[in-house]
Image (cartoon, rainbow, N blue to C red; front, top):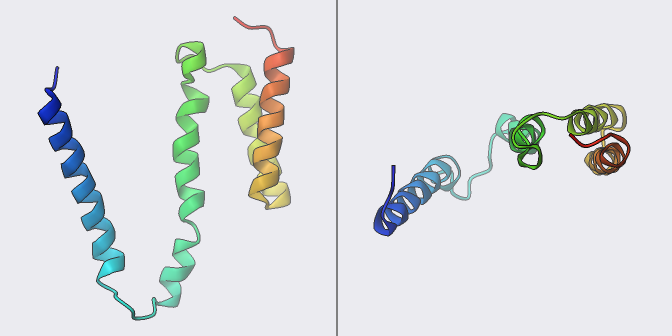
Length: 111
């Protein structure tokens, strides 16, 4: 299916408006009133919920390997999760994952 330039911009505008309205319905309508404690507590988990959704496709279907999972990325993902659980520090987990990925790519043979 091929879209024209106008159709692509219409889709982008509609998705942008939809995203804005979803966020506004939650945050904008509250105004300057304080948020309930339960809402503030749940908002702390947003990055923890979003990051795996962004990273999982890069681990399971990496473009570098033509969409085929490879041991280097799987090992790096496991190390990242383990270090994150052990240290409870995102920066250390990310650093461990990056280091492991580069080490595994250097050590493991390429297909």
